[in-house]
Image 1 (cartoon, rainbow, N blue to C red):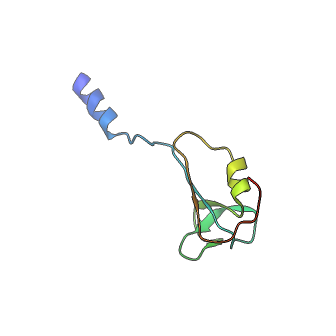
Image 2: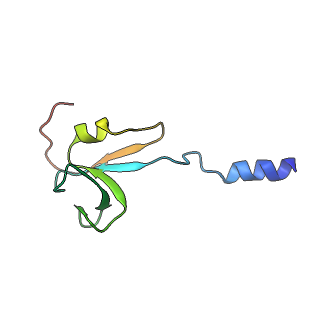
Length: 78
């Protein structure tokens, strides 16, 4: 019984529930939950994206979450 429990703990990723969000100045809306990395657009994917760095920072983030900033020019105060 204890061995099964320990094995189950080993199978749980350390970052369970962690979210990766993107910042991409090329998207049209201020944020979306249908972002696609390949096209850098909203509408067909299943990822979270924000148009601005401030938008991503204003989102509800938890320990272990990651925000990836795509190449572009971001002229804003953070």
